[in-house]
Image (cartoon, rainbow, N blue to C red; front, side, top):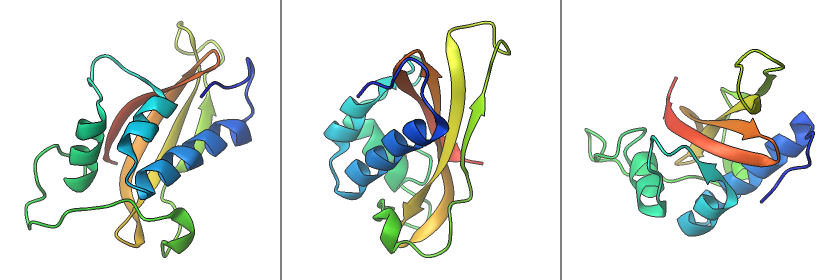
Length: 131
């Protein structure tokens, strides 16, 4: 999914919301296809699933809990992170903005956070980790 050449914060967050909805449906392939990917992380639909289930690690969570993304409207609390930061000339590269969004896991907004960058009309998934 592509953004306009100069996307608003709302347009960026709307795509992230749709990405979270894909994950909540268990459609990791659709979520993967919705964004571009930082080559460093080697994102695949299976890796997305593993990192979310492992609360930021591709290995199972220490206590055996498997985390799942909950539909945002059904999660209690509020996102810890939901922001877009404009980079106007700060990074010296192609990125226009960076975005961070917490994930709703097992019915509660968590501190597991996805980070993205906006390059032109493209939303690029960078990492998913605990802040």
